[in-house]
Amino acid sequence: GAGVSQSPSNKVTEKGKDVELRCDPISGHTALYWYRQSLGQGLEFLIYFQGNSAPDKSGLPSDRFSAERTGGSVSTLTIQRTQQEDSAVYLCASSPDRALGYTFGSGTRLTVV
Amino acid sequence: DAKTTQPNSMESNEEEPVHLPCNHSTISGTDYIHWYRQLPSQGPEYVIHGLTSNVNNRMASLAIAEDRKSSTLILHRATLRDAAVYYCILGAGGTSYGKLTFGQGTILTVHP
Image: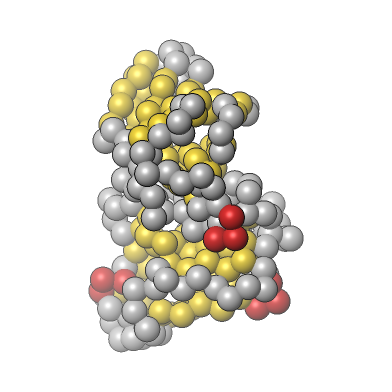
């Protein structure tokens, strides 16, 4: 596709349930990020994948959060036992090279009720 | 992570130039200076980035101070569609390049 695609665009889940958020980066982009943005707040880094290197997981807020990137392309962010404070917009971005700009998707709005 | 300091908000009139400042006094030699903007209800959009020399593209210009401790994003003719939050970010260079740490940004209001 022409841009970074994220699905679903909106997700409402009950507290305690697990959720999976998907990101399809631009084809050929080796770098992929996950961020989240709570209402009225700035972006919070979660995790970074670069090619075949070990991901930078330093931003994951707890062990309930995990992410995978299969085949260097599609990435899935999983949140287990969701809590209300997990409610936010989860944004994915990709880049063809670490020296170039990043293209962000439109995000997944997660609401935990 | 090296931090940036931006004004919380700025205002401009349509079709006038806008200079958005950013201070990054603790920048390291390998840090790139990135600018992104975020329109309401959208994901961030890449604007421009540079290392040492001034940079121009179709969206904006980036002026980098000689000591690299500050930079200015220049929108040459502001339009109403430029109203957004503008983020100045340092991206670590070298082998650790990648993670961009977003601050609070500058809210730009453009008046017709």
